[in-house]
Length: 206
Ligand SMILES: Nc1ncnc2c1ncn2[C@@H]1O[C@H](COP(=O)(O)OP(=O)(O)OP(=O)(O)O)[C@@H](O)[C@H]1O
Ligand SMILES: Nc1nc2c(ncn2[C@@H]2O[C@H](COP(=O)(O)O)[C@@H](O)[C@H]2O)c(=O)[nH]1
Image (cartoon, rainbow, N blue to C red; front, side, top):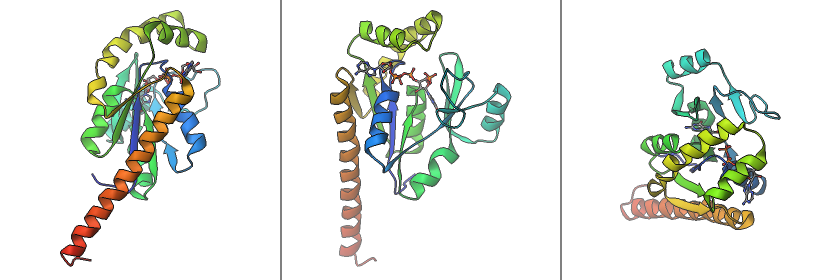
């Protein structure tokens, strides 16, 4: 599907820093809108329904799947997460840019539907640092951290399917790289529109 807005998809193993990077990007770039996902996971300490996620029951999630309300959804770390059509389609149809922070399975589903979506994978600088970020964040139990680290190996094996890879060692450097990806896509989009307009003009089509 071809929409006038750009769709950016950021995936990473849990703890690599994608939420922190996306939050910082959103503070700097008022033209990018976040998508709020639905999840069956329980809210963490400060999380609010409708802000970080729409927290729904298994039955509510099932009903949305049945109603074909998701553009993508997946089982991640023992819970289900999904991006609703409502969260993105209206915005990109209006020409706004939208950024999704989702896992690799969802990212690959998005690419099937939106061929122009830009997929970015965030890597941590090392396994030790990944573990230490999850521990320092202090939001998950030791069991949950072990599950997320185990899943990280499977997730990182998918990196070759993404358009861009950013190593989040120094935060400011990684943020610079993410901004550069967004900027490059906007320039590419303008170039594509110009090329199309030129083709139409040379064929005398208005
Ligand atoms: N470059 C960095 N250097 C050091 N710490 C960082 C860096 N980037 C993020 N962090 C910290 O690492 C922790 C994990 O970051 P964050 O919550 O953004 O990860 P995430 O990839 O979104 O994880 P999840 O998928 O579980 O939501 C946070 O405490 C964050 O402040
Ligand atoms: N496929 C999808 N994955 C999603 C979505 N929203 C979030 N996520 C990913 O789940 C894990 C865990 O998130 P957490 O908030 O519990 O730490 C992480 O990789 C998210 O990116 C979604 O809509 N679809």
